[in-house]
Amino acid sequence: MTETLDVVAVGSALLDEQYAVSNLPEPDGGAFAYDESVAFGGVAANVAVALSRLDRSTGVVARLGDDDIADAVTADLRTEGVALDRVRRGDERSTYCMVFRDADGERTIVTRGGAAKNLRLTERDEATLRSADIVFANGFCPDRVTSRLCSLAANGAIELAFDLASPLDGLTDRGTERETIDDLLPYLDLFVANEASIRSYLGDDGRDAVEVLRTSGVSRGALTRGERGALLWTDDSVVELSAMDVPVVDTTGAGDAFVSGLLHRWVLENEPMRSAGRFATAAAGYNCTEQGARGGMVGEGQLEDVLRNQLV
Image (cartoon, rainbow, N blue to C red; front, side, top):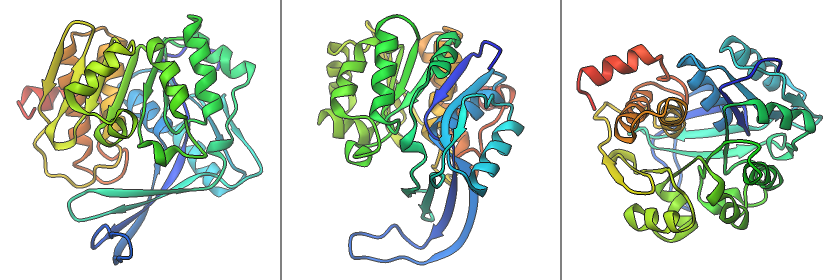
């Protein structure tokens, strides 16, 4: 990457195999898949694409395999205007996800393929990260990667945003470990988590979790709560935002759209917390109206129309 980028996202870029199912089965239960499709995903790639569609310059640091999935993923990111200089390939299979979605748009995700968890940061990666306005990472990043990002942030070399993204048991043997998250918190420019992930990490959610995170040094953050909206906070205030009332088709990628909205308005533009949060909530809600992780990721003008129409 020869240019300075607004945002560099570290983590996964992958393919989603999507299955529309009769139900999300309980243990020992079953379901019927009545439709299937493929789409592009991966938390890092989703955030980079969403921000690119908001006219931000973005890049991805990721590892792919040596296969057709990697060819398709890189071609898609190139089309979206995402810088690919720090995307590399290994001999292993590219990481992909199987996304099972019920009629209400709720989903369960199973991940396969080893490329993403084999990511390691190089000196050239770190040079790119140092030059970016903000670096975005998430809980699915390998622990050695997040640990290094923590060191860079602690030394003032990068500004870092982090989305926990998953309950801790979903990160076992492939993602960021609890102790690294503990170390990371005081050095973040933005922390984001959903209800399931924050309960897994802290044993609390809502305002109780906000107070624990504040005590741990998180001065700016957001907790998403699905159809109940989100909590945003700074050192001295907390705001509660309602979710957007939309016909839900697919919730995949809603959290990534939300994070992108916060990075765009709250972090990069330093917009006031409430208005930035409303924009992010609109981005998340609108993304739920289309199928796939990025189906409803749109430009700023379209999201402003949503806000003007008082849909939030």
